[in-house]
Length: 143
Image (cartoon, rainbow, N blue to C red; front, side):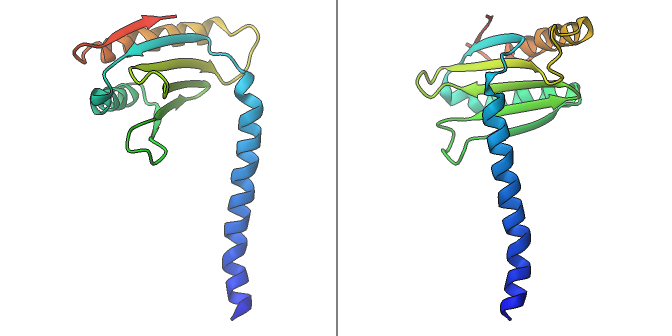
């Protein structure tokens, strides 16, 4: 019976090690700056409307999307949308509850960012602004 338990723990242990490695690598990547940024000013009570619009946007542009509130019941949340080499990260500011910062990242890390990637990001940014602007009493500014 102990051998059976060990077999069950090994995949879990490998998963934990893999997750830890991803976290370490992710910490090293925090130095990457966004290519484009938006600042969304929105009432925290409208977060579900925001999530709905982000979901529609991601479906339109065939982006994988993940929304997480880290088990905080919506007090703090992050949204990641990814397609090919472009990552869009929307992070709720815990210190200013009305602010969501959106960054557009080039995952190829080309320096300089290719003209095609910049054009794609600009098109995505323009469309994202139009989706979010459908929410009443929301302000979106490019930074």
